[in-house]
Amino acid sequence: LTKPMENSTQVKLFYLFGLQETFNNKSVYFTLSLITYLLIITVNLTLIITIIQEKGLHEPMYIFLCSLCVNGLYGTAGFYPKFLLDLQSDVQVISYGGCFTQAYVIYTSVTCEMSILTVMSYDRYVAICRPLLYHTIVTSLTVRKLVLLSWCYPLFISLIALSLTVRLPLCGSRIDKIFCDNPSILKHACLPITINQIWSRCLIVVHVLQVLYIVFSYCQIVRTCVKSAKGRIKFTQTCVPHLLTIVIFMTVTLFDNLQGWNNVNITLKMRNAMAVQFLIIPPVLNPLIYGLNLQQIRRAVFRKCNTHKIIDMRR
Image (cartoon, rainbow, N blue to C red; front, side):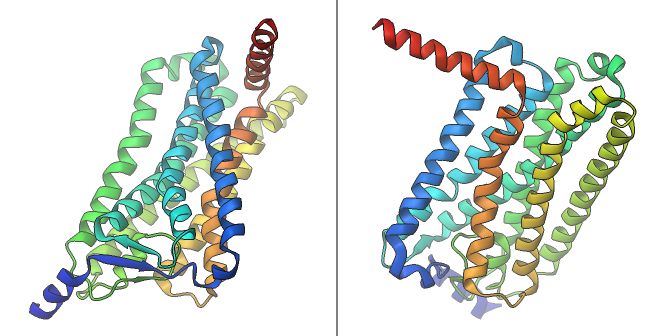
């Protein structure tokens, strides 16, 4: 154990090798990434501010949507600022503490997104399948508990996962991605990672149960909605976008995790492409297909824009 412990003290920096194939187009990638990050901030903040300021939107569905947008800003804040700096640097490095912090933020954001999507599925299930009991079941206290749970659970399990990794001595510092994540760090562990793998598999079981619950909820929702034209319209407006985003999110997340743990033989460009989808699609699409697709939010946003125009004209 002495040698691994000595090696672990030498790992003060991690080297990110995910950008090795982009040296000739750094300015293009920087511009596109900056525009994307500004777009993510704009659309998510617009939705968050609108929901907070409009009292008519203080309903469970919109509160959960607001929580989803906050998570989008939180997760991308752990990636884009560092990524933009790396695109301006000749060598992409990150400190030991910075790497673990970035891994924690991204991992927490992913888990939190899954939890919020599960809560939103529950909300839609009760609203459509048990409409008469909706306000009895989904009370303001229940909403607060569900929002708190959807955030505390990811923060807690992510802390455990990273704590299990921090205890390990490391014998390397190369990260073959454009950001730090737990599997990439564990590849350099000098000791067996059996406990980490067991914990990871336990979390996979939990996530599978969440997916099964979402599938069950939507099976019940579809059965209820097909019975009437009004139900089909409601399903199309509020559930189809939700379902689409869940499928995209789970597909990209699952692929990223599998190639991280099992050393799937894919090119560096492919790894980067999956990472970009993972950090662009949910943060951009969530406020668009969940928020702007809903009439109440669309009207509130347009009303706010018109109000600002009138104020500017008076000036």
